[in-house]
Length: 61
Image (tube, rainbow, N blue to C red; front, side, top):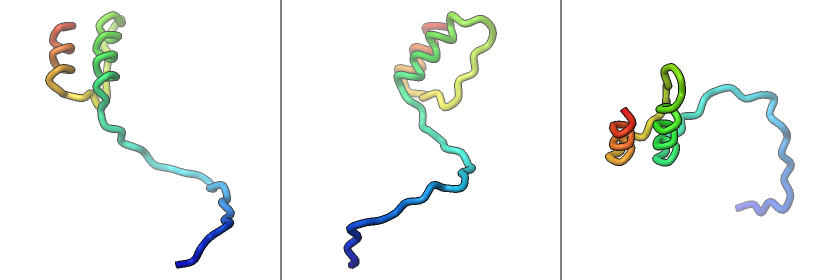
């Protein structure tokens, strides 16, 4: 195994792609609450479909 005491990192020329982030319980609750007071239709991506987040969703329907 080689010991590296010093390395040099160069900037990337560019990155492309996407990242999938799993749903988050707190953000899902907030999205429902804020969507309930917003005008028009609210679209939420990666809504965490847990028992408590679905209960919040149904309470604000």
